[in-house]
Length: 155
Image 1 (cartoon, helix red, strand yellow):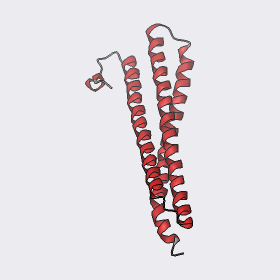
Image 2: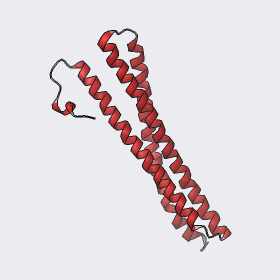
Image 3: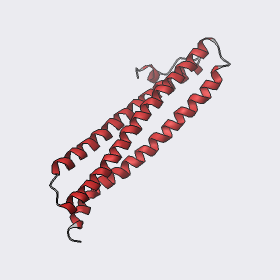
Image 4: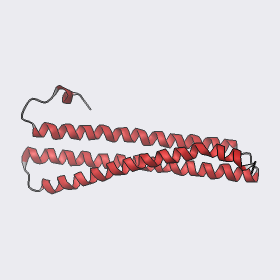
């Protein structure tokens, strides 16, 4: 029992990381579902439209498809991060019970776990930027008044 207590202490970090990544995955899958649902709605509307309105809707659909691909990449990196954290916890316990000295493997696994999480968050930021661009297209297409100065900024 005295041998396993330090290992439990060492495994707390990866457990908390998995919990946080799980919440991120929940958010990302909700965003993916919303993007897909919105694309399906716009695709149905597309058949009845012509001219510039059709082009505007097609642009929104293209952005939604790009968003879905980015969110998929973000989800993939988050899942890899959670898997590496799980591998890290298992490695800590196995190495302790077998008395292996593989600190280098633990360190590299943790670094890869965090790098994957960073890649996931960067992709998530890309999705948010694209969603703002889609909103700008939608607002520009529905308003006959002068657009807000806040919408003139490049996204």
